Length: 285
Image 1: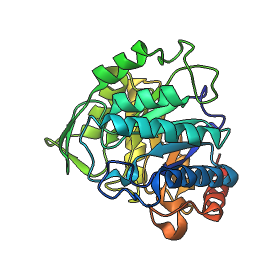
Image 2: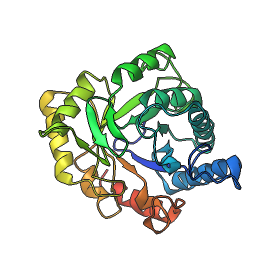
Image 3: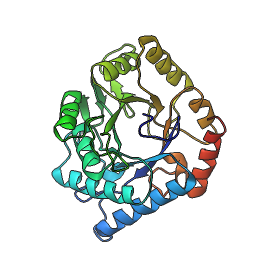
């Protein structure tokens, strides 16, 4: 992932979008202009605070479609991802909730983003949307069809081309495995070897819930034992107090809630919170 991020262990700040048009809680009175203003403002604050990349996500669209989101959501996400990209000089990522990997790749490619996150890339998980199934076969083939494959000269977050990388969760938030077993270890191997993921994400149980250092260490140990050349990132619950411990054993962190006003996930970004967390990260990297 060094082709995407300047930092060896990047801090990726989240741009959590309010409900989009078509979502039950969309604010028709404030309209689309408010969505773009909010995305732009949060992005500018994240960049000013010193993050290494940003990722845009349709966080406000609950209850989420389990997989294929409507066409208008893809269109709105593309426009907003473009706004985010134009608001900063950082690599941009995309996550289309709840689990639309092909849409995330398409949005990223069209908006000039560098990477995307896919919650269930391989295997299956039980969530409030029902059973979520991996679509690695669709996501990776679409990436090739639309000239967004890694290393083929396609558009990246700087606009000069190196494809859209896929970061795949291996223990998905707000979900449970279908059967007992060491599914984090199995999912890591399957995501990288058979799902062709470019990186894997280890998370806590819920958005904002801390990711245990032990879980990250197990994932890194499994990655190293298998000889896999993929970065392991932390995907939830990263705080200024804990980021040092996590970055000492992993390859990067995706941070949202801890960077928001009052520590509320849906609130605007607080630039002072961003600076505090980035300073804590810089102390160990």
